[in-house]
Image (tube, rainbow, N blue to C red; front, side):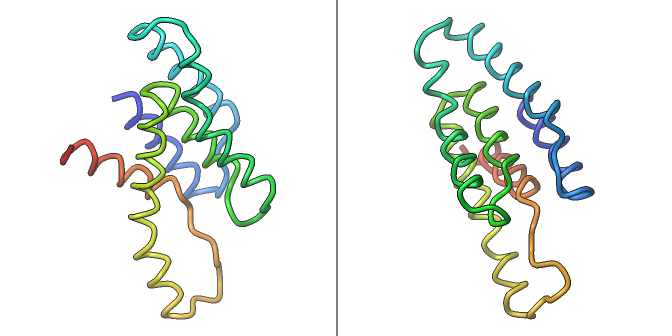
Length: 133
């Protein structure tokens, strides 16, 4: 339930402003870490869980304008709460949902705004994961 609420809030900000507040992202990572630690305890896994998000954030830093830094932080929050595998699944689900939309916009040659917010696609991917897996 945490991830649905968190991704819903991120979706609102990402769609409306194309930015996600750092306070929301850090709160998501902190709450996610707390959820993990209440279930699994403290160990090296806590740090391992955020690595997919850190790698995506590093990619966003290396390719400015292509990937948003907040996308990596959202993956880190998911990983912090439910494990690194869940973070990777969330990324994959978001990419699978985003592909048809991106393909559609390329085919109609949309000129105005060439960027798409990633948070709604991650939310859609996560909801499908909840329903089918």
